[in-house]
Image (cartoon, rainbow, N blue to C red; front, side):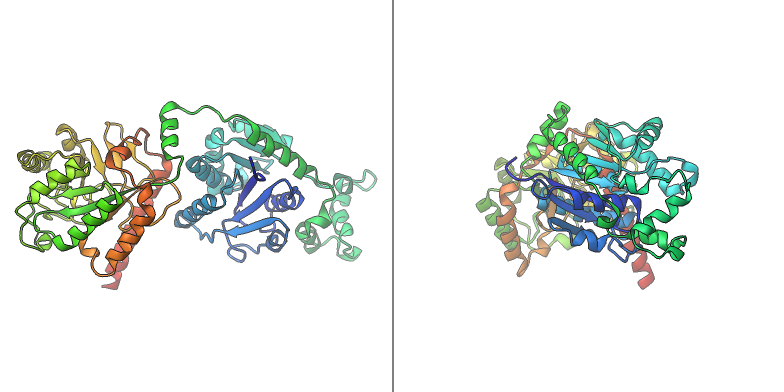
Length: 514
């Protein structure tokens, strides 16, 4: 490694808590000449916390403090997670080190971006009867997922023993006790437990008459780290553990997963998709788009409507050479998608993805969907065109559609919300389609779906500029399909669920507004 190891710590907040205090002590004590330190905080100071340690961390030389501006609830995580991914991609840490809820978040991001993950476990007791429901659920999730962490650091023998009893087990586990100035805080045998209450205020020069008060004890808790602690044992031992983690050989990866990682090791990959390709589309706009695509050497996905009957897509007179052009695109290596049958809305079913509320297929009986698909494929066969992928009009189709497609030999679908292509349990490969316009992303495989009606005026210049920027990372459908040798991950499912929640929220707001 030619530069200093870079460590990104992730924690809920910098309020006056035990884990927050330990993290503050740690970053103040670590050797800045040997480590490049960053601290990412989920919640801003002042949002559901007072951020008592915020100023102390922010003012520590050599430590960069970041805020992810998270809000409460599941949607707060869905907003903060992309910010964290962008942060990790930008600063490129060598290790992600979590505390509290930052443990699971670091594990998710570390798994996606292939970064070593260390957890800090400060909790000694695991008496779940004293925890609220949320804390109990998070603890059980931590225990189940602990085997994916690269290193877990416990702050006590009791904490290690209790968590192991619950089933927590990682590749590497280590006990590093808190550096608490033990000689100052140990009890006086002659004075008994009272000494524990009055010694810390005494060290802080709090008047004797105030030493028994709750506020005095809280002042000791919130005091600057340099006042409370005298040695650097915690920092030195943590440095050794992190350097040891970086120096060890990585654990073996399953071959299929390793191939996918190697293919994506150079950063994000992109696909371009154009919907509503038919004889009566806006040809002047398309000709300009095609010229740009050829110049950039990009191989897009073209969603062709076999027998268009949608008046909204009848912009220009029918092109007599339409199917000649389709065959030419396919011969060039461009993917041709079966885009429904006639592009006509027959009901208000949202289908698998939950949006929008209109469909040509979802909700129809199997026989009717199979009939429509066969009619569309017959037109393709008559014109000498091969269907490379299924693309549903309005993103609306259901499991019945997927089953009918399998029977007809179509096992690739361009749709869904995920970070990379994946394969379902029936062997169909899904190439997710996430955005409508191009934008740089930190990692993953992203499909940008364009409609010609949105490329008029200045939008064409923006399209050209974006493609010049992202063109070197564009891949073809066949290359994306080769990356689909994995299953849908829990994080992918969470993203899909969040999309449905956002869609339902927008619909409800629209109803209220009307």
